[in-house]
Length: 322
Image 1 (cartoon, helix red, strand yellow):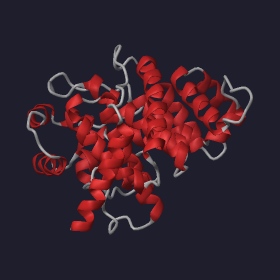
Image 2 (cartoon, one colour):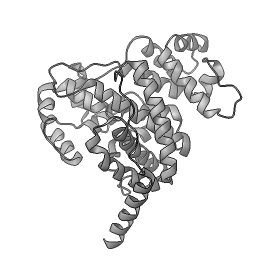
Image 3 (spheres, rainbow, N blue to C red):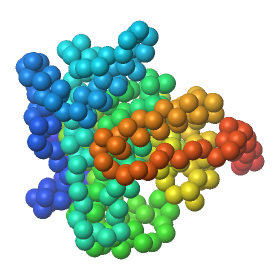
């Protein structure tokens, strides 16, 4: 597959230097089986059942999809694998394998536990939102949310000293991307999209990762569904900032939420439910993956429903004035 998000020779140079995160172990075997035209399903199910994190994610997705069942399922079976889809199972195995990747100690300002806590918060939020909007399969949206910031880990691995120094600078997101591109020849979004493309994740999701930090780009992604996935990731990022970010970021995150909700035809009361779902899911994951100690998903500010309505009204007034 020809890479289209960054210069292929640069990507191969990073690969040769072992600076790119890559899957391994049993989950790599699961990925390869899922990619076969006629996989040995008995072996695949056995391998998935032996992986508590992966099987737990599949079971959770199936129970969301079959919420009308009297009894929730408690184990992985042929039916549950096919309901989730082998493409989604492959992507989940990839994502969970990468979630065990470490960063060099020399990148002192890159905090790995906080990085994975935020990444899983985005993943849980993306799944909660797509469970409501049905914009994409739940497993694929979870994976996309988890991998959306994998480029930051790549920068920490490829350029630990330079990236650590850059992290001390208070830059706006667009300035951060420009500085990364200038210093390193790639930024955290285009290398994330390139990695996902190399892992054979559908380009629809790669494009979404490339644009989610600046979602108001209808001229770039004119079709409704790709744009909806971009806004799903944008809302997921804001939810992650609220759930496990610094309290100082709360107001800015709420503004992002207020902007994203109408783009997805969601109301503030929908957001309250989605935020609770994502938080419960995130709490399970932080314990399963041992990534955030005893951290708790932060509660929303008082009267957040009314605040979101006011922010949306303010935004509408600003648009009208412009």
